[in-house]
Structures are given as structure tokens and as C-alpha cells.
Image (cartoon, rainbow, N blue to C red):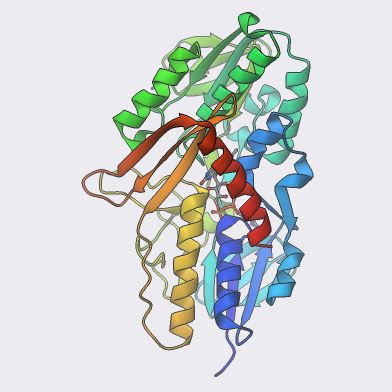
Length: 384
Ligand SMILES: Cc1cc2nc3c(=O)[nH]c(=O)nc-3n(C[C@H](O)[C@H](O)[C@H](O)COP(=O)(O)OP(=O)(O)OC[C@H]3O[C@@H](n4cnc5c(N)ncnc54)[C@H](O)[C@@H]3O)c2cc1C
């Protein structure tokens, strides 16, 4: 059989799982090349633990060069263009031709897209940001803390709420809770809208019990860093002493310009196979958009990037072997919602259910929190 080139763009959740799954199936018969501008795979859920001082930054990643032991070639390079007609990827290290392509370049986090934000806001959405926020918290003595969602969509719908819960517990443990006022300001109509009203009410209940204010349906148009205020789109304003933001998210430029993207810049894909409109070119994870039966997009979350990667690897392997692939991405997913004090809730279910996703909520407990930690350990051990 002639050897083919399978090129995977991105060494995050989707890219890494695709590479490992394919390597296991193809057993050296074809070339698997993974391209990422970073030399490390990062496990983003642990960024919140870096913020809390529970993980050192170096504990949140693994070197992608370790993929060599599974027969995956790692190329550290910036992806600069995807030429779908020529079937080649342009990178800072040269051109890479492909027979099958998997695009998993994630979502860019762009604080500069909201005026004033980059000047003053902290964010746990990047590793460097989480580290900086951890240091800022050490010196924080009290005041008004605003956790702000800049725009939708953003990765991990639970993360801003988890951030607020963890910070609230942190201030309590520090004995300064009485000197701290907290509020979440977000353009969303409720917490985790795609999960439905029951989930939203459950999260709002915990926010209220913790004394964390909640302002939904409140988009922010700018941040006035000098005056430490948010300029709200409705004409109002909101002050802060410490601003913790989910920055605006954007599709990576190379994805937007690839001809694979739709009007929004994200890549529409077949919801079951993850194939784009170009045969043999698949897109998975945060750089895609999949519209659910309730009209809302499938959330940008690692759990989906992971399951999509397994489907795509199986599909590519089956095509190379000339057989149909029985595997379909089924829209099932789950997430932990950490609420501080060593506890987490858990929600999971079928996001492809009609007419609305069907999810089951588990009340917060120590066991779920332990499950999240065990998942992190498994992830770090399993993939590289
Ligand atoms: C704080 C936080 C907490 C989270 N918690 C959870 C959670 O509990 N559960 C959950 O399911 N999800 C969670 N997520 C979301 C999850 O991390 C993402 O949805 C997931 O990583 C998406 O995988 P991906 O492969 O699409 O993109 P990514 O994992 O972001 O990988 C994209 C890769 O592409 C590379 N790249 C991008 N552009 C280029 C380019 N031009 N050239 C070369 N390389 C490039 C990047 O370096 C990166 O390695 C969290 C995210 C954050 C930020």
C-alpha cells in the first residue's frame, strides 16, 4: 500500500488525541505529522489550579516531541496557510503536503479585541495569565472583584463560574471575604445557556448562596483602565478593583482565511463525521461550529474535541484501509463544575438530543472534585 501523509494542525486536545489514535491504528504504514507553534501540549483545565497556586505552570503540560515514541513526527512551526486546492499546508518551516488533513487549531484568545481590556484585566484563560493572576491575588487585600465574560462564544462555558467560585473560597480562606464584593458580568442570558434552565438555576443558586452578584444579558463595550470601570453597552458602567476576564475569542486567522470557514470564521463540519466541505479535510474542536437542534452552538470544550478526534482518527484509518467507518460523533459530553472548598458538581448528557440537549446534573460533592483531579492525572499519563 502506498504511504500517505496525514497532517494534523494543532497539538492541543483534538490534535494530540487524533495523532495518538491514528498512530495506534496505522502502525507505521503511513506518515503522521503534527504541527504546532508551541513545543508543549497544555492541559487548560489546570490553569484555574495555577491561578489558585495548586499547580506549578510546568505541571500543566507535556513536550510534544515525546510523540516520536509513538511514531508521530512533531514539527514546531507556525501554520501560515492551508491550501485546499494544492492539498498542502504552508508553515514557517516550509510546505507540508497532505493526503488527509485534520485542523484543530483551537480558538485564539484576543484581549486586544475589547478596548482597554489588555491594559488592566487578568485572565486565567492563558497559562501566563493564570500565573500573573495568582501573584496579584497574593497581594489583594479587598475591594470589588468582577469576573467578566467579554463575548460569546468562549471555551468551557463553566470556566467563568468556576473561577468566581474558586476566588470566593480563596478570599474566605484568607479571612478577607468580608472586605470583598464579587459580581459576574456576562452577555449570556444565564450560566451555561446550552445546558438549559435547570442547569442555569442550579448555578445561580450557588452564586446567590455565596453572595456573588450576577448580571446576565450585560455586554461590555470597553474597559476604562484609568477609572477602573467597565463601559456597558446599555449605557451604564460598573466599577472594579480587580478585573478577571474571559477575553474575546476569535477563530485563528489561518482558519478564517482557509476557505473552509463559514461567515463567522469558524469551520462548519458534518456533525457526525467532522468532515469539512472538502473531502479528506476534517476540522475538530474549538475552531469548528456545530449548530444543535435548539439553534445554539455545541460548546467549545475539550471533552468534545477529544471525542471528535477519536471519530476522525477512526474515519481516516478506515478510508486508508478501504472500508467504511462505523464511527460517528454522537454529541455526548460532560463537565465538572468546581465550586471551591474541595467540591465539584458534574453534568453530562446528549447534546445532539432533540429538540434540546438532555443533561443530568449531579449535586456538588468531594467525589466529583476527586474525579476531576484523577482525570487530569490520567490525561497527563495517557497521551504523551
Ligand atoms: C481555563 C480553562 C478551563 C477549561 N476547562 C475545561 C474543562 O474542564 N473541560 C473541558 O472539556 N474543556 C475545558 N476547557 C476548554 C478546552 O481546553 C478546549 O476546548 C480544548 O483545549 C479545545 O481543543 P482544541 O484541540 O480544539 O484546541 P486547543 O487545545 O486550544 O489546541 C490548539 C493548538 O493549536 C495551536 N495553534 C493555534 N494556532 C496555530 C498556528 N497558526 N500555527 C501553529 N499552531 C497553532 C496552539 O498552540 C494549540 O496547541 C478549558 C479551557 C480553559 C481556557
